[in-house]
Length: 91
Length: 91
Length: 143
Length: 143
Image (tube, rainbow over all chains, first blue to last red; front, side):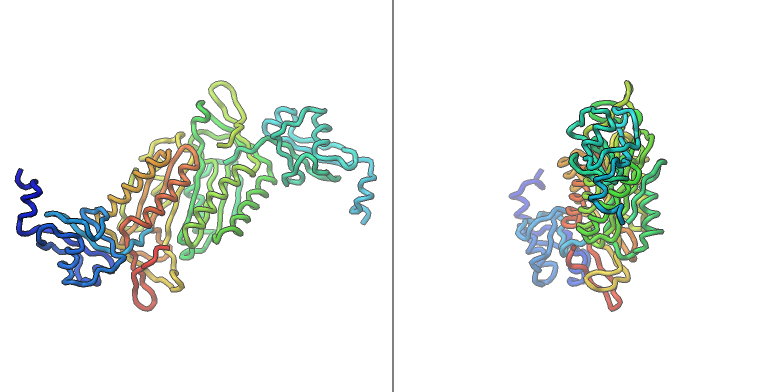
């Protein structure tokens, strides 16, 4: 039960986050994925900072948490998968 | 040259017209095509009267002269092919 | 640009692929192909339909299909278009019509294929007579 | 409703026909089938393109294609829809994507197929990298 308590979760010292990069962003940051430990209550933008060592986040970067589109201020939670990629060009 | 003179053509005693009927109109008038002799300066509506023995011309009937859509007042000329048919239902 | 009236059943997928391979000859140039296939349903206006006869006006039908294709070609930046339309006796699940348009980019193919079908349905001289369980009827509304 | 990511080349005509025959199983019910096929061109933005690599986000791509199909199903009176999208290395004239929609009447099939393609192009995580005669580049504009 304690694992689902939001107050408790914000008190844990770190969250384990899977980070993924695709296409030109993958080449730019030089990795396709990694698992990192983030402090509590981090946002997607903070995950980008942590994962890239502070590289600038381009305005047209798309972001997803658990495969749903979000914006940079979206909070991440322990176990989330966070992805960064450029505008899509399928079809 | 004289065959192309419109004044002369209006003076000839009759024109030979091919008349065609399609679909429900073909069934209604009981024939698919005939050749008839029309007086000079006849219109498509007059061709209908001649060809059907004076049956009423339904408002939604489509008419073509030489395979181009026309309206009932369109004049016909010697050698024309005049067609009558209901609204089209292809596709 | 190719239009054709068919007396016999046809496979729209084979027809479009064959045309694309053997006649169109523009591999690498078209990025977009839009197809529409009209197939005979076994129902219409609430009734079961067992069979259908499609009548046309030989000569005028072809002329107007060509005209419609020519208009699409002027109006959109398309590479080519194809229309095959069935006539004669047919049964549910038989393809009635296939329209295909090739273009470099998708908007032209989408819009032109829709245009071809709408114009075909309003202007091309074809008429459907349906065989119901009790008798037959001419289709009056081209929905 | 079926969506699929393909690593290997596919024939869009065969795929749609096979799906229609073997999976859709609605013969007589659909009067309209609208297809769109995206094919690799040998040019883009004024340059010759020799090859292309299509990358996707396994899991998220499928999820969003399913979502898009579900939205079309809610919005239009359609019977079924199919999307197959290629990934990996490909060459000019290779099919990239096929979208098919079946419906009783044509408006729904036309509109839903266009919707699927527009949504796919704006929301589904795919990325194209083109091989030109001099080097490669990521496609930035999805025209």
